Image (cartoon, rainbow, N blue to C red; front, side, top):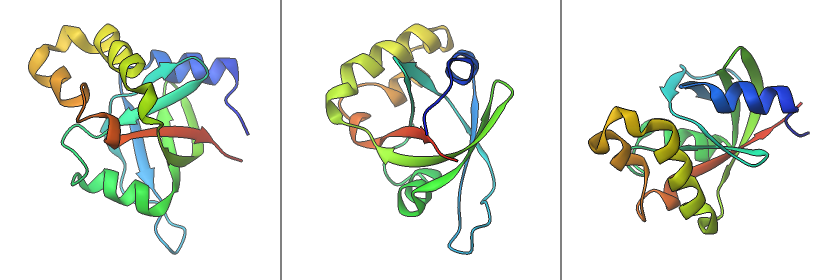
Length: 124
């Protein structure tokens, strides 16, 4: 499945996204609030504090979960992003979140952020 134009706009414009990965038994873990950016017809999230961040480890391990943002709630598949998207996503994060200051935006941009970037794929 793919995102609708309305979903992309709503989620892409939302300041924050709530993300939960699925446990092995199919139940959702507790939601975590993070930032989200849109690049073209894709949505991305990054782990602010590297690959050791619990929500990131669980999302990568589970591969599936659910997101809530901008009035949209969808089941998703988590896929590690292509590192080639790094510079584009850095620009997207700067454009959307620079008003929060360089210290916090610095946690989700740059070379260290590319390996901890997840593409959110809409699922049924």
